[in-house]
Image 1: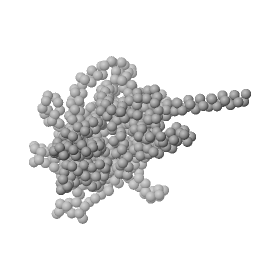
Image 2: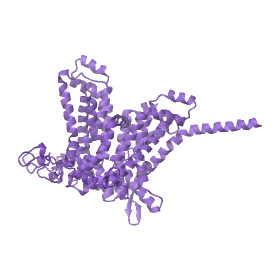
Image 3: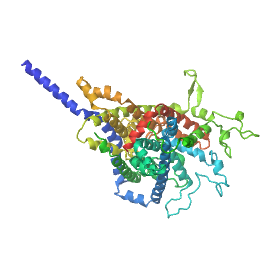
Image 4: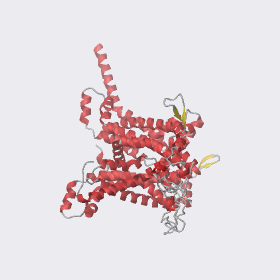
Length: 320
Length: 312
């Protein structure tokens, strides 16, 4: 009898242990899932709901796709998309060219490369708000560090260039905001400055993965330096370049702090890129419904970019 | 990081590489240096037109090293030190930037990063070592979540905070913002942690299991110590992220005494468009801790950057 009770108890214990062991991953993941549900998933679903609501004195009412319609009819929306495209093209081009050049130099046989890398990376840990102020400090209308040069009529006819105040020049192609205003140029410069370390490090890591033998053999076959870069190195690191570009675009679309402290969307609406428009519709004009519609559009663009990144890096293969 | 090319330029052209790199580095540091320079000027030198770079000119000379008028005015106005017999240093810093906002930010950044490391380690371990139903779907969902813009979620989170308060449930700004920060920085950290756990051979764990170690014990006594650099990287990334974060702290925290340091800075920026030396001093004070952290843990930062980016 006693033997049987012991046996059952033992069996029970084993079962309990096995159940616990099998459910362990569940318990390990649960807190993460709950946090993400509360902070990310629920707000996203709420945004979908909110994008079809409008605030009336009585409360929220359902308006269908009215918010999207009114958003598209808003003149500022089209303008903002144009500004964002110009901003992103300039930002990505400058960052990639600068990043590739710097990474290429760093990949050469040099001393102190660690020191260079460290110094080059400091901008990356600075807050967007502070970076915005730093660049504002350079050109602030009267007391900026470079205002003396910029306001000189001899260098910038006819009245000197007041970067934060100068209105945008007459656009070349209809309403498309090109050439850019000086303020948007400054915004591109500031965000490039902050993104450059990131691009440099990732491109450098990719360059260092290129097998030396490939380059040596192409050298023996008579390729010159430029040909090696153009036809051997760039194709080999292309996936990494695409990843960097996607990441830069993602950060560029979503960063509002820089605009807030650098130009505050001005002069007029000359630097009102899409993230700033979202901020201003949502928090200055308190039109949550329309802001949610805009936010959803941004989220879709982001998702396409992230899925593209995942496709390029083929995360599936990294899975064990 | 040690593999090296030397195929493109001959040795005699080495100086070209060096001078290009030095030029890039100097240009790169220029905005920082100029901000630091302005922060040491006095009000009279800041608002001079035309502006001068160094406050070192005399009526007769344009630059005289002995006549420089460096000033700590900006720092004094940010920190507002006041003599205090109780404090061990003989004075205390009464400026709200440090005394209120700064302490809040230290609290938020430390607690959020610790929580993120803990959650990322446990769930990263589960994703790395177990196959369960919905494994791939959940991992993809976690990365897809990062696609929702920061600003989007703030609309809902703001409403959530308002609702909790109006319903009368217990609500605390500080707890709320810490949970929000954890949620924001967790997805990428889970991926980073999983990547590092994947790289550790299972044999180590199997040996420990045979020796009578439970799964949880092997996580805390074997896996986490082995991936310590990754854990430090996750901590640093989150810490700096929270430290530098502005918009969530600005919009979600209702009580002024709970606001983070970036709010204090933005407030300063709005108030003093002319007192540039004060704002410059504030930015130096705020940026210094993270720059120092970066200099000490730069390898962790580089690692987090490379690991975190590849996955979006």
